Image (cartoon, rainbow, N blue to C red; front, side, top):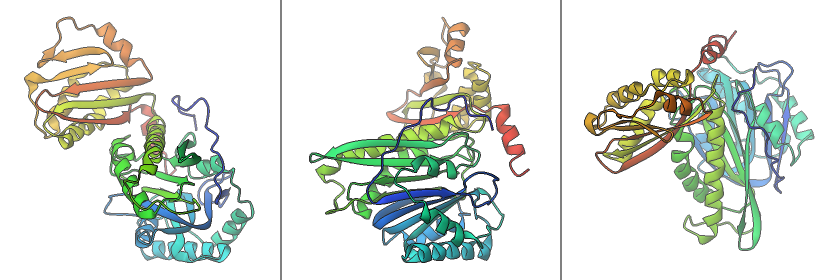
Length: 406
């Protein structure tokens, strides 16, 4: 598969975290000759928080994680690619239970502290018959250094692994937050065909982690869209493997630098998802201001970001601002045609309900030829503001999804 033209030129080296090790092995789930089963192991029970898909048809692993998340303890995370284990009925439930049991047998922990995630084809039963052997193989090669391998093992139609890291200081001690993610298609708000796993060595209680994760998801993973489709399998898990006394209050001043690091890592991973959108050649930021409410602004921003007509115009580098007007008008939110302003990059193309007198197609086209494009819409009727990110829609997207199960 051709690597996205928006792929990073360099990948960050994620530093080792004391208390967590990773491994990836080839399980032959769908792909031949590539690692597709990832094990993340915590030396001691880690504090864990999670956010999941809002789909009414969630996968069996999502159900399992939700069931066991309340206690907030994790000994391991098992992730497979190539099969979503979704819409698989009782067999899906059984395969999840068997995988957790196999992992617990290898690691000597309770199955209830094993968290699972799967990504890939929906509706195909997941054969877990040989998983215990594969997990033993993974356990034998665990290392604190294998973040990159883990990121590769969870890929499906991704063209590159997605990694981010930040170091931050708390009371004179340096801590780290590492994160990996996968996602390329079926990406829409309310999570996506997206998995992400974040681990810090700052000791933080799981209830605090949950509040911070949920809060940051709104402006990161829930503010991106590739194709408007919400997956069955979306999972983000945030774990703390830190030793020592845990931070138990969300307003604790010691969390200030961690909050910054968490927002930055989650945003960076979100942008890597957008830039690897199936067939994407453009990263697009869409800011809507002057709306009646923040909620209204976000709904309008997503109406623009999800419009096939807008996205194909961007792919063709066509400054067709009329399609932006269309998307605003169809959003079902308050808007005044005669107060609308539309801007591509630094070029105002429409204002007060009509094209600006000095509009230059050449200047607008210059913006549209860039790899990263900013579109701004001011409704002029309120103070609501929101920003979302998307990518263009190309012929390659159709090709990838037309052949996905072939």
